[in-house]
Length: 396
Image 1 (cartoon, rainbow, N blue to C red):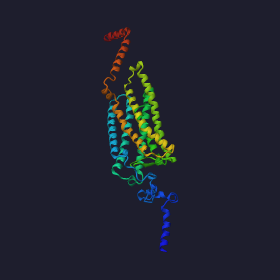
Image 2: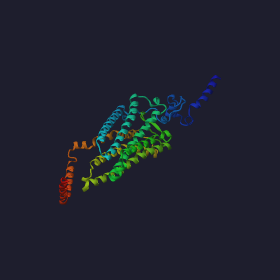
Image 3: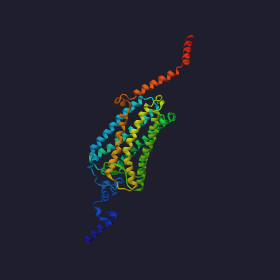
Image 4: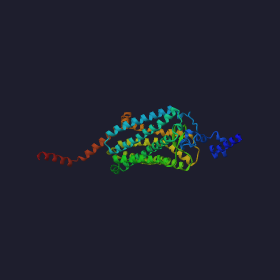
């Protein structure tokens, strides 16, 4: 009787432990299902060990591939230090250039560049520190952050500091388009204070998009190899919407920048090749457009693969290819490392050191044409009037 009673108690206790979908179908997956393993672990309990798992861990494998070359702690540390140092040096260069400039258009452009450098620096600082910490310490994310608070924070920083440079690049393209094609409208519309307000609006827009998963639209999940968090790329309706919002906003920003920058370059080349180009000071405009073109090219090369990969994965309901995701994420992070070198290398002072003849021949031609124009204005009548005026002044 005791054996029968104990067996009856065992039968009564067993069903609540095992989920219905596991006991009724595919019993062999009980020993290898990561979902069952995580739900029965007290370390993953979101509230007092009641067997519930935080959402950022659900559906992930319990053992990540920690031997992947891209996930190396040394690689992440060197990559982050290089990016932080480059952005810091570029920020110093921009501050010195901003103090010396007296042009309103150039000062507005430098403000946008400064905001871009700050966002790149802060993005590398937050995300790089978290990745290097987990990769070097060997700790499991689910043990250190069972409530997914740090995962949500990192996911927000990935989205925020990913969209901010793209939106800032679009704003810079709009500013240069108006400055080159509508110079009079730009002189009254883009003051320094308005540039600051545009930057604030871009930051607010990127911040609102990054907060959408906390409001229920989409989610942030821990990603392979277990040292970083990102948006959940899966064919669930809410996750699909959030992935498409992130991808389409980024791709639309790149497309807008491409159209506006192409138009500005064509207009600038037309002006520089015209006969009255020497009467218009286009040196700074050319410098700014060269920098902006390289910023757009780097952003396109670094971000388009990731954005299209996310959109294709959720639209065509493909399985998530982890190695491709890691590769494209590394490409996107490379944008934050390469951007500052555009401001450091493609400056007039640096280009003149590399090729001292830049600007000299054009300057001599400009001076000759300006002197020729002045000599044409000095007609005999004007000379006579000037002499009479000069003689009359001593008499008075």
